[in-house]
Amino acid sequence: MTKSLMLAAAVVLFPFAPVASHAASPIEAAFGNTIVSTYPSGRSTRLWLKRDGTYEGQRTNGKRTAGRWTLKSGKVCLKQTRPVGIPLSFCSTIPAGKVGLTWSSKSPKGEPLNNRLVAGRG
Image 1 (spheres, helix red, strand yellow):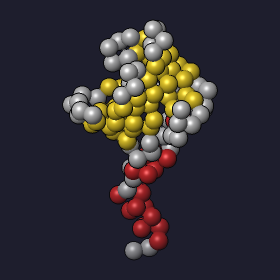
Image 2 (cartoon, helix red, strand yellow; image 1 turned 90 degrees about the vertical axis):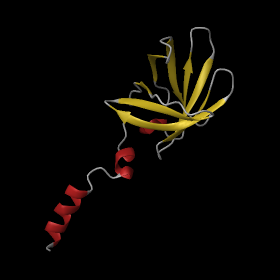
Image 3 (tube, rainbow, N blue to C red; image 1 turned 180 degrees about the vertical axis):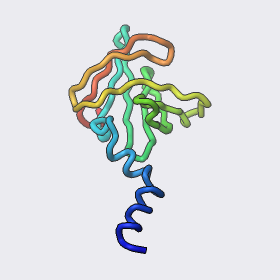
Image 4 (spheres, rainbow, N blue to C red; image 1 turned 135 degrees about the vertical axis):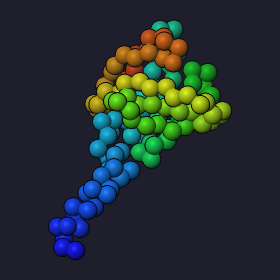
């Protein structure tokens, strides 16, 4: 098999390698940083996305959660596995940007949220 044929076969057989899908992620700036979501009451949650498709979170009551995240139709979808697995995913838009980015969204219960991307794991 020629070198160009081998390259063409690799492109066809492995177009969606896991490393490539997260490396080119529109949410690249979130990795290593914190997404802080603030409710109208002033309470806030924290979310830490990891490149390996996992996440950790801190609820408004300070309790920790964890699970897996995926990108679907331009949204980040979270599926909790800890402390209790939840069979449903929650999807929300997280726009591409850099530390300091702010945007609005809704909580799983439909409450308005003000979100910001802050430097580090704060």
